[in-house]
Length: 228
Image 1 (cartoon, rainbow, N blue to C red):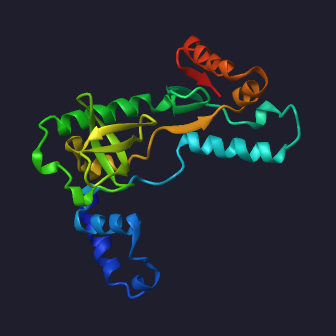
Image 2: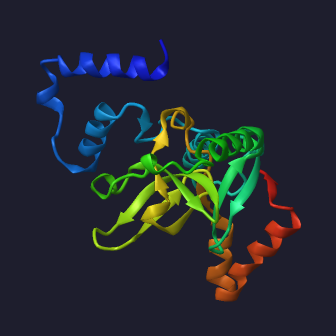
């Protein structure tokens, strides 16, 4: 039994559950996404949930910071360590980071998506009635296909804002560049996490606005890879 057949079986079992109507809120984007998941199980409508490596390390670091609140020098051996690649630093103090160990997986996913969508089948275009925030999708940006999540959708506009979950940035794209995301691409969790550099925030308060751009020089010197 493949993944799609298993999902169909689970959804049919859920429909027969007498308790479902008692707990399901039949409104909002989340409800609409659940309905689409039932009607079109061959596509991914939301991404696999779970703590990725960046999220896990951020959580551990926050727990250590809370435990040693007020302590100037926190023992470094208590903090998690991982090599991260800086994917985006378009704002001076906020970064989109990806564990370097994800490089191979990221490349394999990108290659598979290009092969899958290279024919650009018209039948995979998502109709306007199914375009709303939080929906997972495949999106074409400069002739490259990415995994995305819809953010801002206006009914009368031909444009939408999409968050690229494996790149860590948002882009405005034409609705005509949005496609259904095949279910085989949906079980990967987003590979990028966004974070804020606290030290830089403290520096800017003392040294002024222009000091924020120091972080960009530091990132470039490290060739966009850091051990944290």
